[in-house]
Amino acid sequence: MAGEGSVFAPSLEGMKHVKSEQGEMLTKPFLDVCKLILPVIDKFGAALAIVKSDIGGNITRLETKYSSDPTKYKLLYSMVQEEVQAKTAKGSSSCTNGLLWLTRAMDFLVELFRNLLTHQDWTMSQACTDSYSKTLKKFHGWLASSSFSVAMKLAPDRKKFMDVISGKGDINADIDSFCSTFSPFLAENHKFLASVGMDDLKAS
Figure (cartoon, helix red, strand yellow):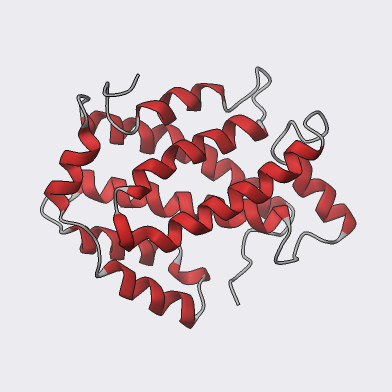
């Protein structure tokens, strides 16, 4: 696999296993796909370091819970349902909170890659800033917003970045597949979180 295809190839492969035959979101495959996206974020360097540590932290939180009882938490939403019933879902260290912010960060990345595909003339900073304002910004407080704005200024050169992530694959086709295949999973997470009243929590 190494050296073949773009950096998206492993996550595209992983997405085939995110749902059970009954169409339910499975915890481990979903988290694995998110983990496979981390190397892509690495290529942004310092600009997305905050996003990367945030995503990594939320994956770890959810994985730890899953590992405590893989049968019980086989389905992604089971840990949220449990917290909602226990009235602990709104806690800052809850799995519900983890899934919400993980999903939002992935929304940001999908939007960012869509921008790179659609707006060939945009700089990387423009693409990042636009996707940030469409996704994470409304949930961030002033502090998070300002640190994000500073980080965006460190965005890498667009052409160099695209060369690095392309590998031997058709990068535009892979980005397109990534966005179109991953978006429905994220939308489903939001729909579920909204159904339990947890989709609009903001950062302090």
